[in-house]
Length: 82
Image (cartoon, rainbow, N blue to C red; front, top):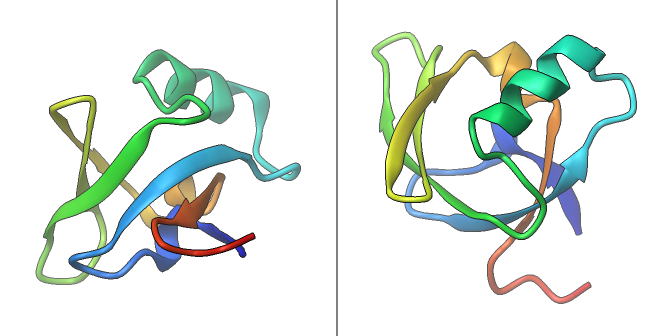
């Protein structure tokens, strides 16, 4: 089942499968530049007190994203069967 990165729960690991069609091109390009590419594993590392932004670990690097940007990233939670 395909979800957005914003729906990932603490302790879950996911694989990036693409971007939401409604994602603006400049946001998509920035995420690609940061390493958010198809097939990359990602997990939540830390959640801010108000739950926005959230720090994710991808390619051994921590990157904080706003929820609005995380809604652009489509994922499949590890262990899900498509």
